[in-house]
Image (cartoon, rainbow, N blue to C red; front, side, top):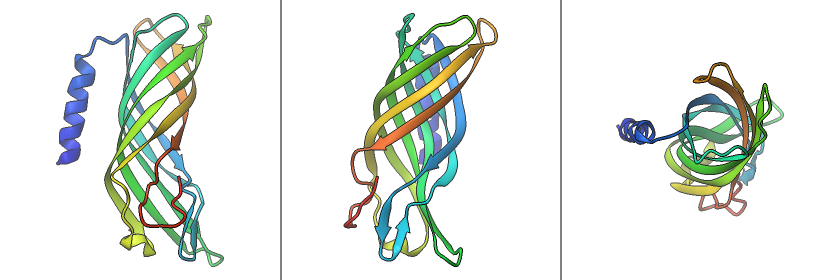
Length: 180
């Protein structure tokens, strides 16, 4: 129920803003949470999903400010020599604001973006011996992104965005090697 309320509030805020561009985002999230828990070393890539809404505002010829509200699934995976998998997922509501520097060309608009990020843990799932660990509810970091937009019409564009999310605080509060 919390997710539905959070999603509705986010949608109303985004739709009521006076933005130059409104985006609906969906894609893959590849995470690698690098830390050890007992004899497990959770350092293999885990592929999951992400989605969200983004508003571009204060748009200039060479830069713009973006705000994003979304959902991202992160985690870690361990595979032993017998191919036994142990993994965990953390489901976050995420909010960020980035400054994007862009180059306008005739056919494509490439850009670089950077900005702070705030994550709130909605739920977590553990398929391992991690069930007794407590993941932090609030996490923060920053995002670095590269992307490009292509205008299809004057009101519709399609784009590709690759974002690296760096974690600043610890995701878990009771391990010696806490990971990022």
